[in-house]
Every structure is written in structure tokens, then in C-alpha cells.
Length: 192
Image (tube, rainbow, N blue to C red; front, side):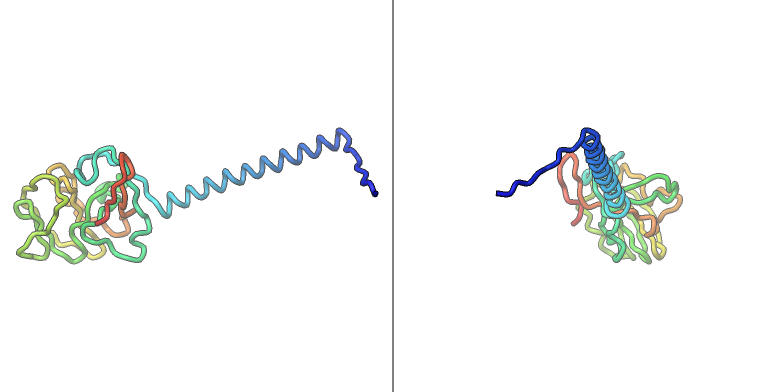
């Protein structure tokens, strides 16, 4: 029977192996952490938009304190549609982020008569089951420019929206995301 002889490592060699092993493990952990941070930044900057709702302008669809997720890429290859809830830069102060519902599309004329929304002089108002309360007031007509949108909150009696802004319309490139789900305090889809 043949025996394999193993030389035992000297204490210096054992310490050197431990240092290399500890260094390798530290490097592996560092790579995992850096990879995780990079993935989080990519997701946050290119895929998802996380928002906390600060006002009652979208009640009762979205309540104060709710948290929603929006898709940043939703309009890369398509256009916003009437009824979409979008997160965008406020046209009068682009440092502020707003969330409202798309009502008027490019080229349309929007008029609000006795709180009801009419598009392009239609005899029938928009069917808006999501509106909170009974809207009132007369506004417009507003002609929506190309590449822009007219926005209203669902809580029309308490919403700072296109009716009251100096710059009435949101340009498509200022739309940051389409809100798709409320995840706190419970799960609720925000798409029709």
C-alpha cells in the first residue's frame, strides 16, 4: 500500500493562507455589495419610480400617505392614454413631482362645464367613475398642444391641476412614470 506524505505547513505559511483566504472573502463580499448597489440604482433610475402621496388631490383612488410604484419605461414606445395616472415634473416648478390623471391628449380641446369634462365639443361628457365627489365649475376651453397633456386630479374639489397652473400642460418628456400599483397600505392596481 502506498502512502502519501503530506508536509505540514509552517506557521508562517498557515498565516499567509489565512490572509489570502480572508482577503479573497472580503473581495467577494465587496463585489456582492457593489453589484447590489449598481442593480438598485439601475432599477431606480431606469425601471421603477417609487412615490409617497403627499396630498389628497387623487382621493379616493390614491390616499394621502399611500405609496405607489410607477414604470419609468411605460411611454418609451407608446403614448399616454386618457385615464392613465402619471408621475411628472410640475410645469410651473420642475423641482416638484406631481401625480395626476391624463385627461386631455395632444391636439384635443378640453372644456369643463358644470364640473363635467367635454372633449372636442362632444355633447356627452367623459365617463369618469373615479372622480371623488361631485365636481363643479367651468373652465376652458383649453387646446392641448402637440406632445403635451392636460392633467386633472380625481378629487377635483381639492386638486392643484392643469385648471390652475400658469403652464397648463405637461410635455411628454416631463412624464417620469406611469403609476401602476399602490403597494402600501395594501396592494391595489392603478391601471384600468
